[in-house]
Image (cartoon, rainbow, N blue to C red; front, top):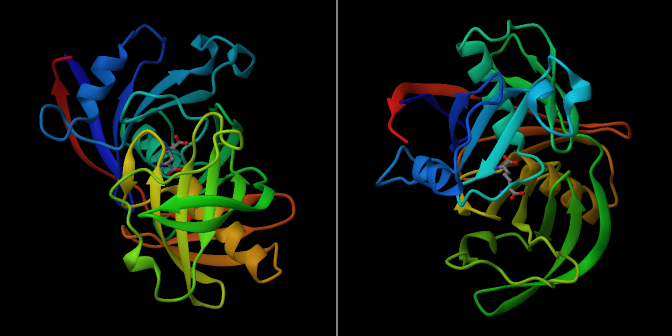
Length: 269
Ligand SMILES: N[C@@H](CCC[C@H](N)C(=O)O)C(=O)O
């Protein structure tokens, strides 16, 4: 039996489990089962907590925890922003860390987390970059122009005119150029609510439309900022599952928001 916890950050939900010594060898089928909302536990992805010393290629980080994130379809992603906050909440819940600031190893590098006095968790998100500003994206038979944003993982971020967001068809995966996104992409649709305040919807690579995506909110803030000639500032981003704060500085992006562990259990895998 596998001991797990279920958690979410703005309704982006994850099945979490620990494997400090890297002994578990779950197959893709078992990971998909854990994320299956009918046959399994249910989640947008899985978070395995393993010491970096036991992860090939990351041994140099020794005793730090490595966040082994997998999408619901078991595909590997470089980073997961909501997942990183939930990962910290899970490690704390399990008594594997205390509430002091901590470094976590991810496939996108070593990132830093802090538990804030107001209950939110703030994580560093590296330095997001825009590689191109006008790449075609299609959804529901319409064509849009997207910014190509790298937040460790690949994003196509479309800034819409106000009032357009609700009508975007995300029944199916949006189209995007495969030469720009050889490893596929997460796609955000964004509209302004006010100055430095946007709402968004997201199609997540390896999952589908989700209630939230942390890296996606950072991509949304970066693209929205660029659309009004800005590169820094504190942005409020509202995905359908809640509200996140994105701070853009020249040295680093920060993602701040809630993360909760809602259940514990054991599951036969
Ligand atoms: N939900 C995540 C992003 C997870 C990875 C993404 N689906 C990908 O494949 O890149 C987040 O909160 O950032």
